Image 1 (cartoon, rainbow, N blue to C red):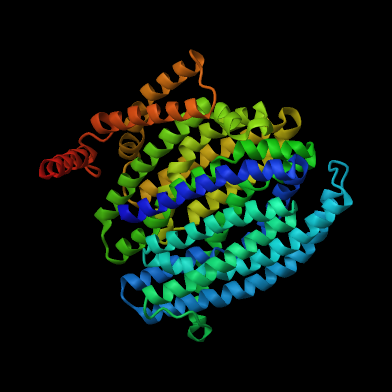
Image 2: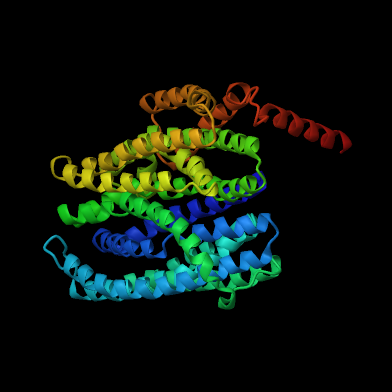
Length: 512
């Protein structure tokens, strides 16, 4: 399991590198106004993601269940049923996208925007391409569901890493040749099509017996798949409302440049969320398999172990960004950096310290146990409250109000879902908090105080010094994790693993 999560983290590392290269490049190449139009376009088409009804997550859930029981026929019926549903919803997405096209045109031609006629034409064409690509993406995700269900994450991640590198090369090359939104949209199409072809080919070879065909469609499975998918759709809807609609709220009430300012302050959370979801992608099918084998004790251990690991990672990365996030954005973005982006990052980070560990472990375990109702509805309510608060606060408090509108529901969601998961697994909330939160939090205090003293004292300016500070922060936190946070931990023998690693190194050195 650690190998699978490690491969997910390796993919996250590549995603972060690509993200750090592409974001400042795209912003500086397009300019803040046109980039704001791109962010708005993506936010608007994000609504269409809801039409997929959570089918990819349902495919993982039911294929994993049948794989655990070694029932290939049932797994193929689940896959074929999901294929038919996604193809139908892809067609619906194209129709709905046609209606949204007119909404985009009216939105970007309002007085708040100052796009030229050529830029408007570019935005319209890009929107059409993005909608078509999104509709095709409903089907294109299913091969990854097959990899996830078989817990074959290394092969899956190698394919996705290739797609990221292809996206990087195409974006830099083509956008340099032609600065337009259409180019960005075409890069998405080329990347997804390439990944789909490779994923289909590799999954057929690695998982004999899996068939991508509609003839195994099972009408009797539709209701079961859709009932789970509806709650998965609520998850998608909640996430979209919480993290995608902010750009539309800002664009409707503020200047277009404010969309870019907020997006840059919020941008760092996309790869950060990916790090914790890397755990959830492995935890969910594992929980499904454990439930199928009635391994209740192992489920509790799975929950406690990976919740604590996730909390440790979030405190490590989040603590660093909470203290020196503005300095990091300034060094990363250069002339495109606005100090307000740094302040927004810090406000949002406080809530994500609680939100991310729950989103990364507790929620996927509940989904894997076929208990999606409460977490899905909670995330949907979180998204709705986010939008309502953002609309109410953007007037009097500006971008800070939008950030608060995101942060407050994040915390409430985390508390509710953590308690729900504890009850489902018959685990005391006090035991959960004591194991998952207290020691990692105390372990992070000393490195955080040291980093803050460094910031207000000598100061930390420029990427080289930020890297030195980050390495120092990480090493001190790692040392405290060994001697305090994970000392005597019943699920993670970190001290023992370090001792064994040192012993192997000594033996290797002696043999040499």
